[in-house]
Image (tube, rainbow, N blue to C red; front, side, top):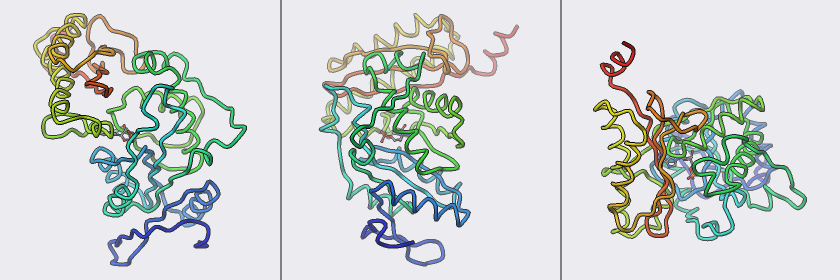
Length: 313
Ligand code: AMP
């Protein structure tokens, strides 16, 4: 490939062969197209992990899985303006590109695609995608337009990278459902894999936005995971009434002074319709502000085998 086509970063890594290979940093649409064309000509399978950067172990888990399953791994870093509301944290979202590149080199990523917003959305850009039925529930209620922005950027990235497999985290559960629907509805030729949420040793879901939290707030933020584990414990104890479960979850969250509930819900995992009685595979989700920081988390509720058997009788 013509070296002038892309910006090659100073970061490098060693492939298993001991040969030094570079992490390519690509910023333009033309260059990423060219690079992907070369990968396809070489019959390399491509694994893709879209991110907004400020990388942590949650992202790295997806990337490691992509490494295991593909010849080439592409990671995008793009803080997508379309998915942020007017009063949200687009401007202040953590941007740590140098450190991100170091981490990407260490885990053996081949290409990082980091376009500017003007590259992704040049003058005249006007196409939107509306994830009907899915966009105005849960997070979509308090973040109008968010999932339209997600859908557009993910489709654009899938069109550019043409991955065999794209990897997403369960932490953003609603996002994964919107993306699976988009891929199915628009016949995008890619396999979507969703991997479990990576947490710290106390259960706090890793998130780039955790960087906003003070030490005290980090401790307060544990109420999200406590509420979710309470939900599963109630199901384990045979309590299937979702109102009762949500009430107990609310109690845990409101006990924490710095917490404000955006929503707590137990829903069908595909339609996001609220359930009155828990069914195995339903999802308990919540969005909570800790101070000024909005955090989300979820758990897929499972039945112990013996309870599942009884409910069949
Ligand atoms: P973001 O950079 O926050 O847009 O996240 C990029 C991808 O990483 C998304 O698919 C997220 O769901 C995923 N992700 C973020 N945090 C975690 C986590 N703690 N565990 C697993 N996946 C995560």
